[in-house]
Image (cartoon, rainbow, N blue to C red; front, side, top):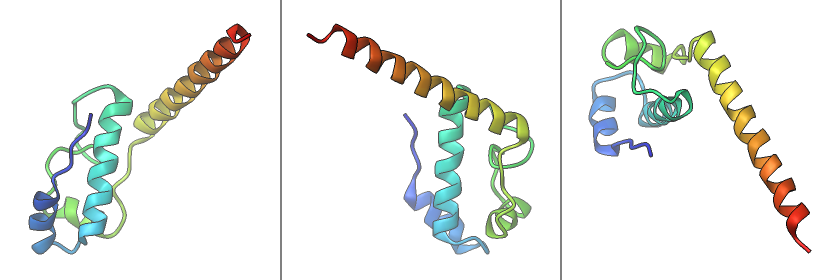
Length: 98
């Protein structure tokens, strides 16, 4: 489960170049990143950075906030594995249905 607080997003947006929409999208991506990476850890930079102030907010406004290569590759792998397991389960269930 992931949580994003809209009031916090709105408060941050008031003193930032980043819009509410940009902040909301980045916050959602950050939280989904935690779910797919399977960790609560943060990184020193990028979208998985814990503290979003100053230059980080500028990066969000300029669309520079990304997952690092290792994070992106691991999340891609996790999504592929989930799809593979899901397809396997569907085939297994279908083969048992009379």
